[in-house]
Image 1 (cartoon, rainbow, N blue to C red):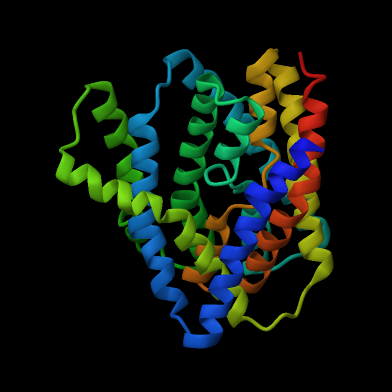
Image 2 (cartoon, rainbow, N blue to C red):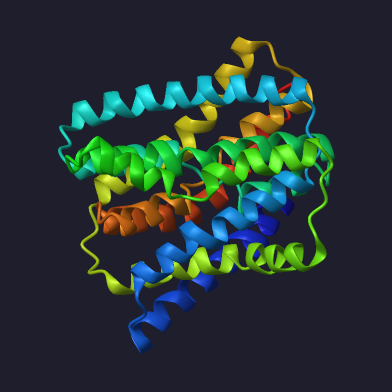
Length: 308
């Protein structure tokens, strides 16, 4: 019950309030969703990725093992979604939207505080979650954008140009290089980075709220719930199977399984809005999966005690 109450009070309710504020602001002022989306892609997201990677302490062994887990997990979930997409007979942008809603999950502003709650501020488990966050920041900005543009039959040259303009793909190696070489960031530069990264969560959630407030709610319940089941129930079950397959035990196994249990990422909404690819479906999935996660994440936390 303590986990349930904490997740409700410190994750779901604050997220819901911020989303509601975005919806209210749209109703009052008709905010421009495209401008908000570009702010997230080109300013807020790169800032928080740099800050978290630059300030982290990650060993090479943990980095490689976590990356191996992530790639196996990503491939397994991708294959699972492809089977579902073919069975359901999705076409066009819906294929990409469903896929993104499952393989991109909220590894930053939801998973990091959750990790630190469950493992009581443990630096080791935090480093694992930061690696997952790094990959979940990189993939939407590369593969995610490629897949959306490919579904719209965009030229390869145009897709590559779009991807190469995104700051986050340069920020990740720069952050690792500066941390590895112990290169200090000048105070006048680091202060704005802190300001911008601190605004990431609020801006991303308000963007989601603006999208929810601007759309006509024609809820496709079966598709939204299918995505929720794949992300919130099948996702952690697949993660558990992979840690068993890899022979990972103890607190690392628990941290990896927990990282798979979080709701759909805001990145899926930002991509959908930026490239006009099923934004209503994507917004509804993020909102509903965040609400339902209070129950599913609590269940995963309970079951984690059986992972030794």
